[in-house]
Image (cartoon, rainbow, N blue to C red; front, side):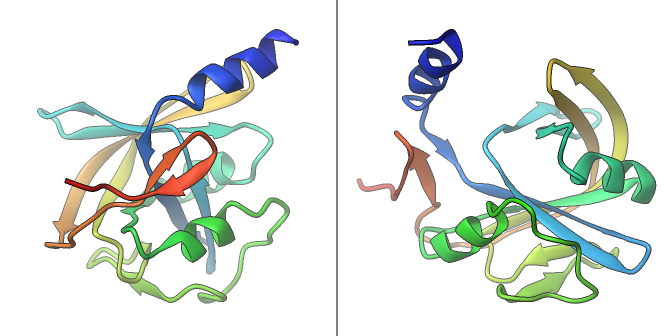
Length: 160
């Protein structure tokens, strides 16, 4: 087994929430399901996402200088699957998945259990990914009962 396969197998044991990164640039919207999203700092409030450099998202975020992160709820597998489809083109409006807007004008997934609106803080490139760091300028969370979890290449929920 190649190291890349062993690497993916090992990382599949890391349970994580599911997030969709979105941006709007020059009148076009684009979103992408991400597996690497985390908080970085409280002061200033920073988060990061890791995006394949081959994807259009890093360039769109660099151009727009802003992005949003939608944290999905247990009932949003369909949204996660849609944004995980490779080869999609940016669109002028939301398609396939219901969308909403932050007060600052960033697109987010409607019904997400939380969202963060970010201004681009820094971009780093390592290996085949861009590490995009954003400063959170607005955030909202709901009282949703359960997040969507991804574990061993399958969607799961949280139980008590």
